[in-house]
Image 1 (cartoon, helix red, strand yellow):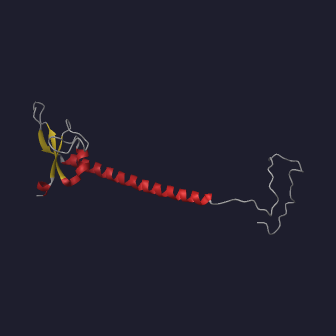
Image 2 (spheres, rainbow, N blue to C red):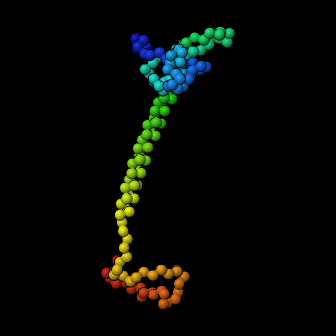
Image 3 (cartoon, helix red, strand yellow):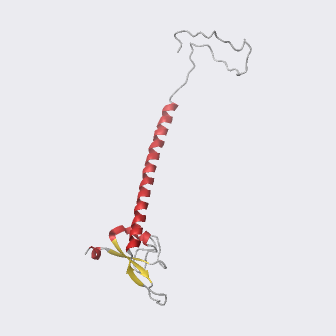
Amino acid sequence: MAEASKQTLHVDEEVGADSTEAADGSTAKPYKTLHYAYQQHADQAQYLVKSKDREGDDEAEWKPAAKAALKKAANYADAQRKKAGKEKELAVRQKKEQEEREKSLEEAKKIVIKEDQGLPKAVRINLGETRPEVVKLGSGERPKDAV
């Protein structure tokens, strides 16, 4: 009973096409592969495949798709659906991370570094500098209020 209400789609590997513009599953415009037809319509249709029985026959017949082929197409469609879901989830996560990065960058741009006027003016020196008039070394003692 359930089979009678399903739409019938045709698959012909020789003259079919795997695109929505060139094929619609009719006998005049069949799909090329069962995989593509199944991805487009899933369990909502009955699939007929054009096949030749013997090499001597010129006339091919429309026969129901093999159960193994339908199962393979269903598994492939499920894998593709899962893959698309993971890619979508990854894109959403990457977009969220990018927005957080941009927000952090904007907050970092607001930070202004100023020289403390209470300290002596900073002087740029080379690390190899040893002249005492340029490099003033302390005693090593730090005042208790220095952090």
